[in-house]
Image (cartoon, rainbow, N blue to C red):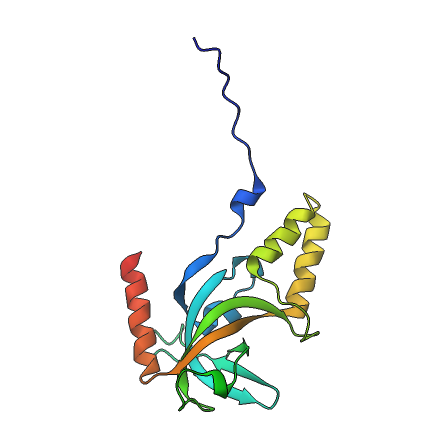
Length: 182
C-alpha cells in the first residue's frame, strides 16, 4: 500500500460558471429574447440574423419568420426584437444598411438595464458570479434574479454588421446545420 493519501475531489462552484464562447455562434433573436431564465442566456460571441428596426433613440434587431417551420413554432417577422448596443449606420460593414434591411449582426450578448440605460451591462457569467457571492441564501438569490428580470433585457453589443439577402433561407439552413451537428 502507498502512504500517499488522495484528497477527495473539491466541489468548486466556480467550475460551473459559464464558459465564454469564443466563436460566433449562430443564434435566433427568439432564443435570446424569449429565454425566461437569464442564467441560461448565451455567454460570449454570437451572430444573429434579423431585420433592422430604427427607433428614434435606439436600434433593434427583429426576428425573421422561418418559412419551413410548422406554424405552431413560427412567429411572424417583427414579433420580438433584440436591443442593439454600440450600433450606428456609420459603423456597419456595408454602406447599404438601412431601416428595415435584413442583416447579420456579430457581437456579444449582454444584459442591459433598461431602467438605467447608461449603467454598466451584465453578462450571464456576471449574473452567475453575483449569485455565487450570495452563497446558499435561496431567498436573496431569488430576489436578485427577480430584480434582474425586471430591470434587464438581453441585448447585443454589436461589433460587426452587414446586409444580407434571403434572410429566411439563411436562417433555415443554419437551423438544419445545427440539427445535423447534434
